[in-house]
Image 1: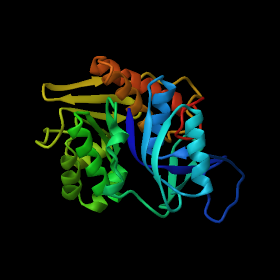
Image 2: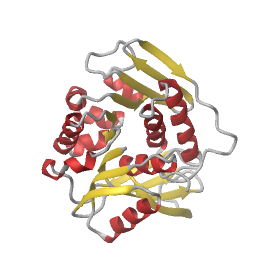
Image 3: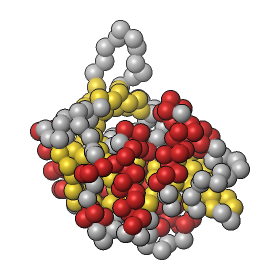
Image 4: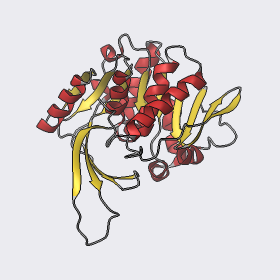
Length: 285
């Protein structure tokens, strides 16, 4: 499976208490590969699924380390390297919620960078909704290449606040242009995109709406079903960073293997639960 987009460095700071403006506290710092493509492919590799990260990585020592760490996890990388790696500082609050502070880095992915060999032998191509905002032409080119190769396309959308800032209609046009076969989003994103009621005409055949500990809504042309989420054991939740990416990986692994969709969603829940028990968006070793 192929996930396309940018490689991000996640610097995670575990807070020991709620932030106080003007205060000071000690933190525990961890640096890992981040961004949806890295998180999805690392989770796929953990599940035993061959995974390739394609797209853009910085041409700096920070990106060197991130690529090496992904290779150790068994992820194949096929990237154009230029500029400086994006860096997200993730504040992990005591209740497991997180706040992201993002440095966009320098560089990007151009349509001419997208190579057909990135999709060779792919069972699915997964695209990131944040990269759709930053690198729209490159992401559209990748989706077209996947469709030309008869490879299904999965898309995970950007945050609701980012969609609203960009313009809902304009973002829907971007999504529709990708012609996705599967669309994943959370409840807030679904509400912004009009996926929480009457099914819009642009929506793909399969839409998954996850909502943390609440049931995941599975929408198809035939109707909607809900899949409950097994509760985490007490004290298991450490960090919600990357849970959506892990969910996507678990779903994709099952979906493309021919597992019934509801069972694939359950596999996504299990993958997300594993990531919720560690700090950062990368899965446990």
